[in-house]
Image 1 (tube, rainbow, N blue to C red):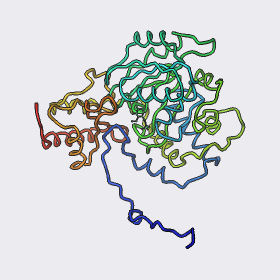
Image 2 (cartoon, rainbow, N blue to C red):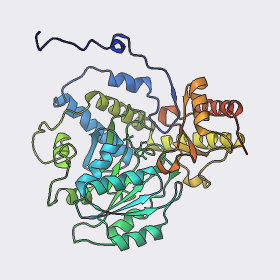
Image 3 (cartoon, rainbow, N blue to C red):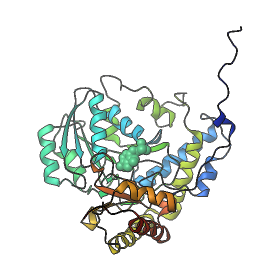
Image 4 (cartoon, helix red, strand yellow):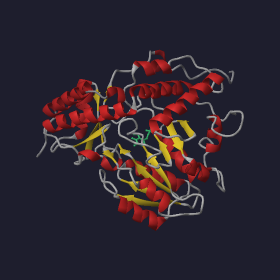
Length: 400
Ligand code: PMP
């Protein structure tokens, strides 16, 4: 018998056509992708090193600079989801043994602390329960105590539904402690769940490194993640003693791939997600056409409409202070007596509406409703409220 004979038959599932249901993605992401962005992603593939692709990547950079409100030259999109940007930021700016300070008030700080720990940083954490936030005084004290090279804060804490204040923190990071004459503590901010939905101004708010994801308010498919580094961050990451642990995420290579270094030619590093970049370009174009302020206003108005509707159903919002609520992801305290998993399953089964439970430390505390970008309308808020009301009516109430 020939060694080369095929003895594993083609799987039966592969002989059936792909089936994808239509879902109302009213959870914390991904959000529904509008036809224009889907169509951009369906354009013919070109090479990742073709001049036309460089043009598209240059457009993406300009689009990110607008969305982030930054003039940073070192602006690009990661080939990968939000976690890729988290790892890229930490791996490149921190060296093993250096001190990192991470604020944890939900799952994202936990993740960044683990990422920093894995690459050998000395990790210090400030911890609050989900929905808590840190005062300027608390941050200042912790910075002075731990003298970190990097401080991490989540702007849109999607596991808790909190929009963390960012003003003044950048000033603390630049002034509170000086490692040497050239750089001190870098301020790293996660805006995966908030970009385009809640006001954030990278340069004015003195954020040294900012990243987001493609699949939330930007409404592109999951799989690409905009990131930007200012000069302070570049100085730190391009003057390392040892190379970062990841070859794929090494910014010396990525900056060349994105035409951001001083070399005259871009060299092959990895094959970027060409279709994902087409779609990301289109999502950034839609944001540029609409205008950031309009997008922020739309998210706030629809969120307020949704919050009122939720309270009219007799439910309680998890974040009490309106000004601390994340407009893109609303958290509802789980109503007494209900099994949150049953409520979610009911809405999915009868309304094709996705909402989700908590994540990490907020599991069992909240139900999360996200109306982001294309999904952000009063029409969709009504759809979400109808599904919720129906679930409350039909799901068994056990106690309370
Ligand atoms: N940070 C925040 C605030 C998020 O909401 C998410 C996604 N839920 C991430 C990071 C991680 O992004 P991704 O799932 O694209 O890796």
